[in-house]
Length: 378
Image 1 (cartoon, rainbow, N blue to C red):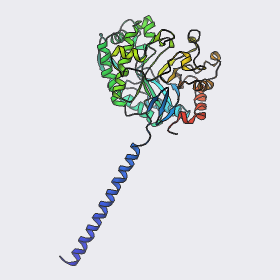
Image 2: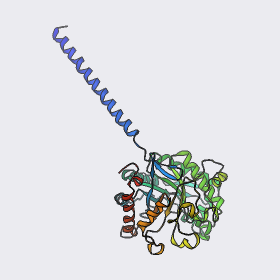
Image 3: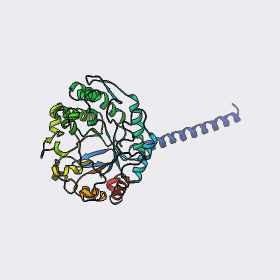
Image 4: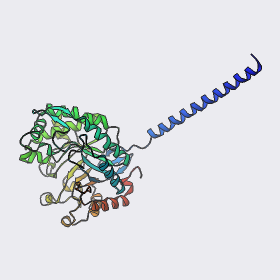
């Protein structure tokens, strides 16, 4: 080998070594970046006693209801632009959580046989929810998805009758938990901006109203317990039930139909429990059950073992209740409630009902209590 060839080969080896070292260095850098991302603070909401926590810091639900843009939004025809606009608006106004009905009624999503057994599930539903929860993560706004409502049970014939057949059959309930709830958990557990699954909206009316079948509480509570157990066994999400009135959520009245011992006894499953109470309140209830905001949850009638929030209430009842909405958020916090979520429906002009009132209240609370509304910072 000539001297010239030796020099060329030596130079090539030096260059090769340098490239390898550089590549290894880049790999370590990329790995370190990934590890940093993975080890960053978790946005997952957990429960500690009677408080909501995120990464070891308290979270207060400065919330709203944006239940639907169009009834049964998530069947494959989701109005993506309208939902994006909504999340953008909520983010700007200090809202950190919204409750959305991902299945309003009927069989557009879960299709049933006349026996109440599941026929199939609309796959387009999942595609729409993919987009919805991606928006939540993008805007860092928690979502409480409501997966059923008393509306499912309305009507003498057709869909309502099928849903009542589902709810009164343990076999059908178990299948719903397996096919729908478990699949929901499997698909979305990695999204930490799903605050909690609201198993049913206001089941009180399924029990009380003739048009909904006046089902027994044992059947309904079995459904809640089975769904809650499935959520806890297949995800890190929280579970709750949006009770319409405290009448069925308190030992002071007709008993707590979602109490731990009730759900566990009916299902035989220790994972059958709700993580917090989400009682709804409107002023028509005052003569019967009092007023919740200027008393503690326990004084209102809830037990002292779980966080309590008001999952629905009016944003425009200051004339009746004697408090402006901004005051209502503040006194709820001062009295130990862990959140407040006002009800708003979408109007024909594309705005949310009395949004100016909501905007003023949530913005004021977020400004005054930044650390509670944004425990991970903003």
